Image (tube, rainbow, N blue to C red; front, side, top):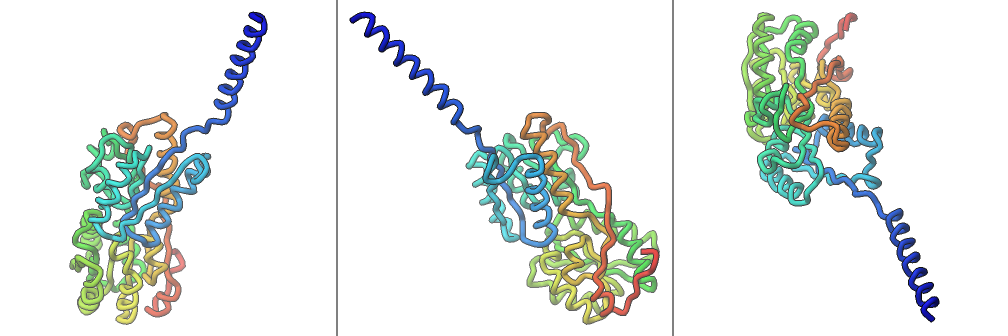
Length: 318
């Protein structure tokens, strides 16, 4: 009897160990949660997000498999940015990807613990998102979409050689735009061009401001400004009707009707940010020690239909 009981006990223990081992094999690794906060929908920011997702997938981090991406769009409203930021933090995401300065500021102001990767931010340091672009020092790092403003002014003189006065069109509440416009103004001055600022505070002002500018300038210039980018179709319609060329900050604005740009590729910028995310997720680096990164190459793009409307021939050397 004792031998029988002992045998049953041993069998029970062995079974328990097998179940335990089998359970261990079936248990799934923790799904990484990545929260995304995007300021507004327009082609540049959308491409930035797509590049980020594709870059993660290329590194083996696929949404719905081993990671879960919670994408949220603030539709251009600062109040929505704060609400979304609170949600992502309360969800205890493993990493947050913030696209555009207001979105990045909203989430960075609410957590110093969760790693935050930013993109489509021109100068993170002046936006007070990092201690410095070379040494962020906190939980925030990422990629800058600093556009080559001086090169864009030079492009303007090549495409519109008779231009004397340039209108700087941008949103008055965007830190990024002021930073870029100041660079563009300095470059324009060196090229002997006069400049005047035309600002909007909301999308409803775009039509009136652009119409006013068309009567005062030879060319309109807009940097990578989110509000102008989102309303570029309207800007281009008015400017093209008045035969005013528009030199813009990025390719999406050209696709929407703008005349030309020499700018960065936002899809590639997103992929570059994804590489940084992988290093953080795998514990190889910390945000504090990763300098803000920049794209090395830019592309010349022009809208053929707009060029025809304006009666401008693209020089062979471009």
